[in-house]
Length: 184
Image (tube, rainbow, N blue to C red; front, side):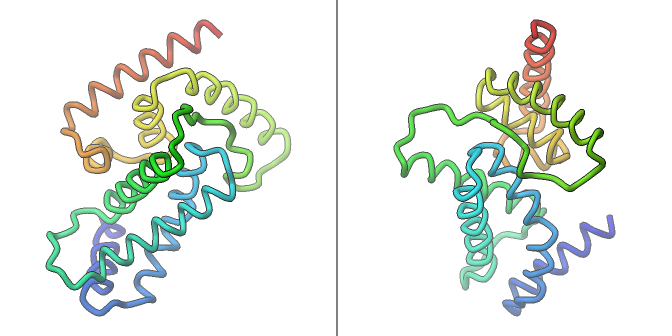
């Protein structure tokens, strides 16, 4: 609860005073999460870095715009929604018809002991291969819930769906994931 209050305070400072330091704190809290979210969808380090930068620029512009805005319930929801919409624009702009799946998490994450890292990479690789076979909607909802560890309410806000719809979609996605993993 303290973190949420702190985020709201930082957002308020950015909106009211265009406070660079407050935005810097928000940036530091979310840069790795947003990069990972984007990278998993693109599997291209340079494009993921570019889009992540664009996401934070758009977030800054949104928060500091002179027009009156509705209260931001969650900075997390806002920044993930902007990231999602920016990726949609990216795919649309490139006229990419190919389904971008999840390739690897090699460039993402923190260093750990070698054996543990190899084991985790192997397990993650297996799961990501299976996720690639699923619909993009299912991939996205599983990533938001279990990789980004967002709540159902936050996911609903990001995807602009009702919480009930998110729960149903997540249930279906997990059911399909389980079936695909059992076949493997």
